[in-house]
Amino acid sequence: MLSGARTACAQPSSLMARFLSSIRIPRVPGSWLGAALVLLALGMCGPHAAVGQDANVEALLDRGRKAGADATQMQMVATRARRAGLSNKATASLLRPAVALAEQGLPTDPLLSKTLEGLAKQFLGMSEDPSGDAWKRTRAPLVAAVTEAQQQDIRANDIEAFLNGLPQGVERRPVSLNQVATAVGVLPDLPGNGASLNTLNTAHQLLTSALDAGYSPESLRQLPSALQSAHQKSKRPVGVLAEGATQAIARGTPAATVLQSLFQGGPPGGGPPAGASPPGSTPGTGKPPDTGPPDDTGPPDDTGPPDDTGPPNNSGGGSS
Image 1 (tube, rainbow, N blue to C red):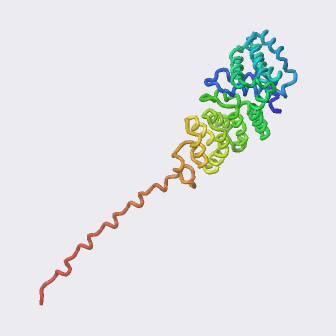
Image 2 (cartoon, one colour; image 1 turned 30 degrees about the vertical axis):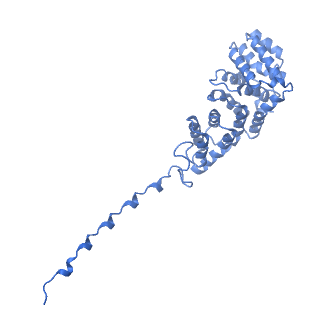
Image 3 (cartoon, rainbow, N blue to C red; image 1 turned 60 degrees about the vertical axis):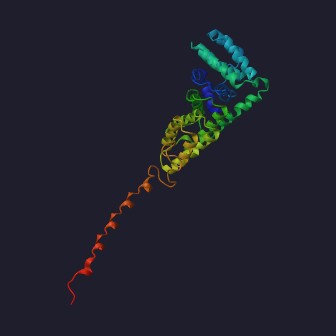
């Protein structure tokens, strides 16, 4: 399904292991992490796994034991994955990175523990569905978003990089898989398909900050049009606006304030409250109408003494 990911799947000890290692020490556990991990195993490395990769679970368990990995943990991952309705290939994809780490002499306990935690949180209750329909429904939005993003020229490596950065970037609250799917779907909608931003990393930081702040799917979907509106009205580079929005979100500025400010062409989340800037004003100069001193120069009308010279009729002299 995701043709661009075959190369990444062919190197489980690099790209896949790097993703897994990035979730080893999250400060706030996110319920989507286990699902995203399995999604990468299925959506990116499942049907299109490189030929020659061993999909036999028992063989991987044996390799892991010989390399020094915790056999009990590995067996537990395999058991829970099967109960969640995952296929043999998907289960093998979960185990393979741990085996690769063990064979390199690296510790596997944190990785296997996090994998078990993700399976327990995300797939709790799905084991009652032997057909795996619950899992398919859970991962369907993210799979669809990844597929659509690729069809709109977002590379698989860029999508994977975005997902890789989420565990460390999302610290405040757990993020649902649907929210992650929405963020992936927003990537192609950013102005210029993301190319207008200084780097694609700017787009990743913006969406990661929005997820961390708890942006709703609807607010996430409004970000591209809000940036475009701010760019057209302010003539500022989209990258600068995106960076400003990221900073405003990180400061805790509410989503409604950030979006409204962008739609009005103002600084994202900064400056005066909504409505303070005239609708048609250009960015940065909105105060001239408030400068009123020119009308306060009134003394010229106060010179009145000329009317007080009144004795003209009393001059004179005498009566004849």
